[in-house]
Every structure is written in C-alpha cells, then in structure tokens.
Image: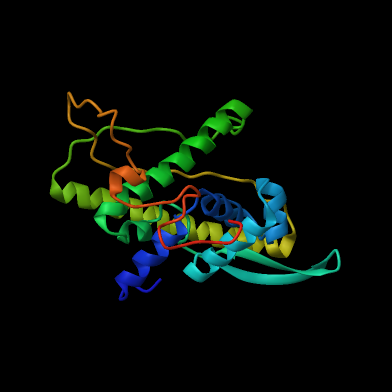
Length: 225
C-alpha cells in the first residue's frame, strides 16, 4: 500500500472491512492458499458471495492470486493474503479517525472470537509455551513512543517469521500449525467511566458510517452478496 496516497489507502481499507465475510476470508488465506470453492466449504457460505468478496479483497490489494489448478473440470484460482494485510496491522490505522472504532472493533471482535473458541476447544493451553499476559504501565510521551517502537519492531519480526515459514512449508509440504498472535497497547478508560448503553462502539451508529443489511458500505452493492 502506497503511503503517498492516503485517500486511496483509506478507501481500500474501508472497503476491505465492509463485510464480516471478508475478515473471515483474510483469516483463512493468512494461513494457507485457498480458492473460492475451498473457502465456500470452509466458511459455509454461498459460492457467489465468497467469489464476490474475494474479488473485492483482490481489488483492494489485500490478497493476491498465486496459483491455478484444474478441479472437477474447472480452473480453480488460489489466493493468499498479501503482507501487512491482516486485520489490526498498523496500516489499518491510516483510515480517518472517525472510522478507527470500526477498525479496532473488527480487530478485537475477531481476536476475542478466536480466543474464546480456542479456550472452549482446549487448544489455548495445548502448548507449554503458550503466551498470554498483560500489564498496566504509566508512561510519559517519550515512553509511549518507545512502547510503540517496541511493538512495531516485534510486528516486523513476526511478519518476517511468517513469510519464512510459508516459504519453508511450500518447499517441504509440511502442515501448518495455526497460531494467533495478539499485541495491544492503548490508553484505558478513565477511572469511574461508565459505558453508555445507547452507544454502539465500532458500529455504524458510532462512526457515522451507513451500511445496508448485508454490512456493505453505502454505494457498494453485489448481486447475490
């Protein structure tokens, strides 16, 4: 994504977040190459809907076609996520401030769902070195910047490990072990703060965005989506 074209970046990111099925597709193709028909089976969604959202994600620059293969007499197109396209990457913070709640809400919602599923399935603690910790801190302005730099360096290193693992597995044919990595640094709510039940954080009512019943941004429509 080109940092010199912020308006185009904003449009791509907002469109990519425009439907929950796109988030699920992104999660799958972060771990493995997949075709629309495979995604249909994995996500239990209609092929027409999946194919449409795959095209949107490809147009937004979040995924790329990496292979084709014949299957059941038809040509299958296989896609994978492009680097830095996962929900929650700092590139997603480049959307306008009024839309950041939607970005954060999508990232947290996806993360919490995966964490809850792992806990219920018994995989959360299946490895002795599973990492799960958080800590409160008090920092000045320079300290905030230093923490952000630590997280950015860690994210860059994790991306490099992910890319290296994908290359190794493509050569070896080894089966991937899914891994969710979560990192967060944010200012907490002030002491005594009470949530307003009328507010829908991260939703259309909170950020002023308008969406139709399918979760598509206003002005974006898809036949059968």
